[in-house]
Length: 332
Image (cartoon, rainbow, N blue to C red; front, side, top):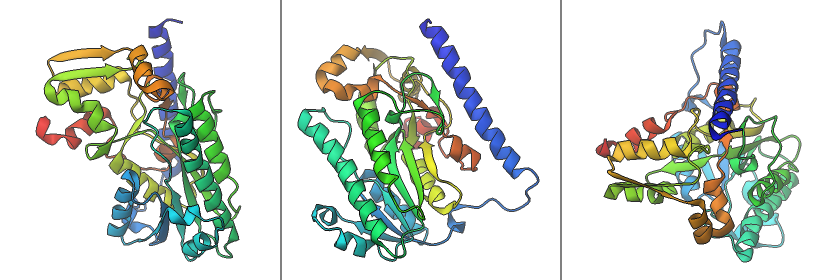
């Protein structure tokens, strides 16, 4: 199958998944006359968070506080102790727990760093689950992080119908999710699979668009590969939405609803920043610089947020052009 034929088939697959998700949403709401619930309508909770001082965790904590929730940070020292007694004590009385802990994925994967990637996710989740399972009154819901790296780079993926791919990143996501699945059956478990989180305030985006600020667009990876992303603000709101919606469980893709390829991402960046020169960085150069970690960029996945669309979550940044216009308004 040619590259054009493959892209056409993937676009059709993606469109069908989005249509199916939106149709399900419309069917559920047909005839409903009640006012749409907003994040401020949900029950106020005491929310325990691992990784609360990190890039995502700090923004989530601030947003929760603004909405009136109580935030209980689960500091790293609680996970370094052999016993989970102190961790269980910190969790007592919490209504929800959100697990965001994990070493950054965008570094060169040496053998030692691979070990850190695994331990920071698997061991943290294992201890968290053990502590939750000790509680006589466990939290109502546990949201445990994963990533769209779980999926194969080919095709477009919903949530329930796709097995894990055959790669280090996919195996890590699978093992991470399986640890979370050991939580007490009375706890509603949600396994959120994040796309690449974009924000002008941090994460991968400032490095990705830095050349554009100097009039150069430097694109990377196969131009036709999918680039599943989500704006930080949408991610934070989606986590709170999932926490408050008692009927959401299982795997949930947290990605923007409009499909984006590498080509479309860098084209949108070039148009927004009015760049004059475009260069492409070959995969071989990325592998030389980043080693196996380059697959995060070169083997993008197409993941559809079926559950969020079906449940009526509204994205502030549904497509990449909207994101650039809102995130960098002074550059329009």
